[in-house]
Image 1 (cartoon, rainbow, N blue to C red):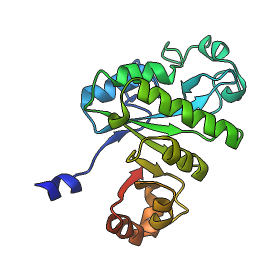
Image 2: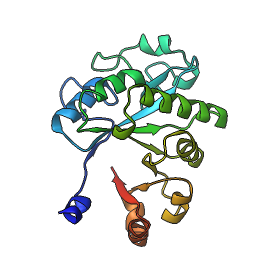
Image 3: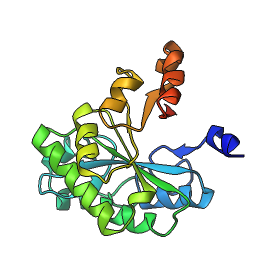
Image 4: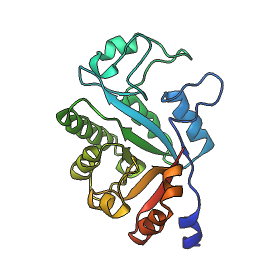
Length: 209
C-alpha cells in the first residue's frame, strides 16, 4: 500500500484551477476551485511590490503596470483583473489555504531584482507561513538557485523545496537543499536517468505543465 501511494501521480493546479467561468489565475477563486477538486496542490506565484507587500501574480506586467516589483501595492490593487477580482496578497492566500488542508499550497517565489530582495521575500514568505502555522501544508519551488538556497536556510528543516530550471542534476539540487526536482517534461524526456537518480537520492520528481 505504501509503495502504491508513493507512486501515485499527484496533481497540482497551475496558478490554481482557473479554467472555469468567473475565475482567473493566481486569485483566491482559483485556489478555492482547486480546493473543491481536492487536488494535491495549488500553485501560486509570489512577487514583492516596491513597498514590500507580497502579492500573488505570475508575470511582471499587470494591466498598464510594466513591472509590479517597481509599483506600490495600492497601484496594483486599484487595477482589477479580467474577472473583476483584485490581485491578492500572499497573506490572503494563506488565510484561504488554511480552510482546506487537503490541498497543499505550492509557493513559487519569483526572481527579484537583486539577491538582497530575494532574501527579503524568502524571509517574509517563511514568516507569513509560520504566522498561520501552515509549514506542513506549504511547499516551495523556484527557478533561481539562490532562492532555493535561501528557502533551505530560512525555512524549517524538512521543508519541501524543488528547483524548476532544469539545468542541474538531482545530486546538485539535493546539495542546494532541495527535496525534489520540478522540471519541464521535455527536459525529463531528454534526461530520463535524472528521474531514477532523484528517486535513488530519496527525492521526488514533478513535471510541468
